[in-house]
Image 1 (spheres, rainbow, N blue to C red):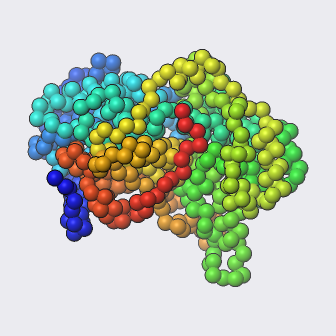
Image 2: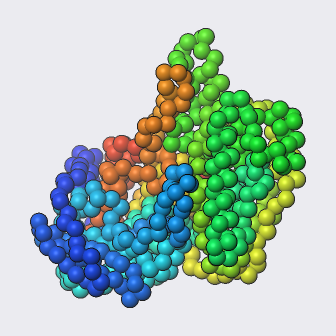
Image 3: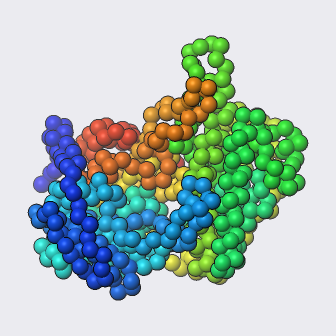
Length: 530
């Protein structure tokens, strides 16, 4: 039977997303090993510990309808982070279970008759196989407590999106729908390649003492990694302070190649933008849209508007994105090097001039013109590259990867300018689905995109970074309404075996704030895969 629905019907169905927004108090469950449950205000909440020591939690309302949302949380740092580190300083390793992406989403799902569940995993860091084991034990514990469970929806974000894909790949018939969000796809190697470019670029242009890769085992390597984070932020702080004048960090002067650029009068912001371009980092960030300058653009006497938008904003966008991604990139590399027993980052065969490609022309003004571009290209060609340890790389490649097969209704969502897990990961899944020539509607993708202009300025004409970032930027930065839209879509797929008609999906793209309405949007593909 066809599931075609009129546009009026699409609007009526789509508005049921709003029903998820009903709030309800969630009691605090007892903290105990083994499933220990408590019921209050119509919600039964349980906590327990799996066979490998992974803490888990799940809840279901009195009117539980038989559908469970199994949430897989994203990458958590496997080491404590010193308080002095900006943004995330003072982080302590935690294994707290996470049954939903947020309290608001949890309340909305429970209030409409759904169950929620999730594990804290037995090991933090990159450990998807252990997470899969823990999550399947959570499913078993939930079904034992609620034997009327009929449908299970797997969803998760970042590494949790990767875990979601592995859960479905490895447990056929268990899940009725899945939603991998801001996800790593296929394998971790592709994302590591981009981290390599960023860290190598920062070392090459701004501080040759950055270690970047080949961290020593144990505490000594931990100290090196934390030191690198500090050096990156010192360099970024100097770059930000001198962004208009183009002042270079003092540490750059220790590099003969960078010293040549300094002597040639090439602004440091142009080199920073070049780092972003070789890595494929978005030039739009949490507070810089790349098109807005201070003052009135219609005022012919205001020359600062275009100068800022064209010459300075792209570098500031890269700077903010590096700041948001650097800690994750360094810690993930340290984490995996410790697990694999050697260096895994390798750019020895990378042609960075070719990798920048046409972007050199697009950002010609921000790169300070053809002569400056040629000078920086010379650095890219001459700077020593990194090589990996073959045994460590072989061990990494032997770890599990996701298949990309869409065998159950699947909903994806990604921020267009995610600086940590590039949107190309989700485009890969989209390409995999399109290549399958499936006749049924089994896949839908939502891309969050911000307004054309969102950069703001103080009364003095300085960038104002005090306001919240739009959902098109930062890592896994989604609104509750966007998350609940995905949840509604996945539930429709779980109950019907296919997703809603394309007309309904498009209605949601056009109605839910922050979604790109372009149903044909192709995001940049990853330059390196596998």
